[in-house]
Image (spheres, rainbow, N blue to C red):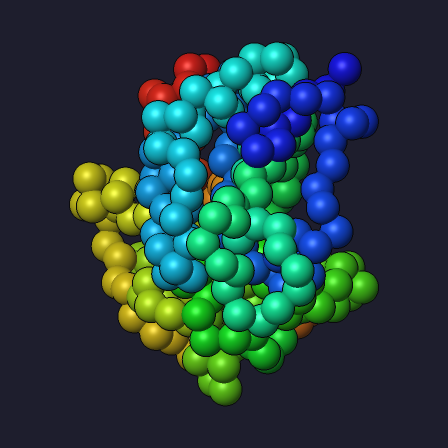
Length: 285
């Protein structure tokens, strides 16, 4: 039996239900997080829950549970589903009420759901590198909120999939923002360059963690906007995210990045990021 959480209660997935007038279903009116699990332990769980609270505040929604309660519930869910390596998905919507663009009246509680899924580390791709396409960033201007409104991301990701590529690298005009489901960074002359954490990107937890690692290890980095031309002339390019960790991108629109192989800065960052995982969750099997 697979267990899920619905409104704070553990139940089997087959009987889990959400009302058809839930505002997440009808408006995408909610926020979510995906937390990586290694050896049955959540990695950077605190950082994810902090961002969840921040996203909820930005859409003027008050979460009905404390971080401590969420940790207790999700740890119990992981244990009951005997999850080793995978993810926990959690989502809050503004609740269920008759369809109306205005927020529901007071007394309507947010809907909370969570589930786990087995997801292996993409080791072959991390070793060999992946390909990407370019796509115009057509999303709204509050990409810093991890909201349920992902249609723009999905359309770009589908283009990448149809082109046989791993990721779509998004740009507003000539400025690169991020990927359809990851942050994008470049390396030039040994320095990592990543878009600043403003409203145009989601401040990825993996992004935050690798910048922390760079600071600790005295690896050069800059948070600044860069162009499509900078991207295509970079020595190295990589994407970062909860499920992809640090992923080398070796071709963009069929054009080789650097020498066409994962570069030394990306490789070093992969090693240091893996060490951080193991420090929190134990040796990766």
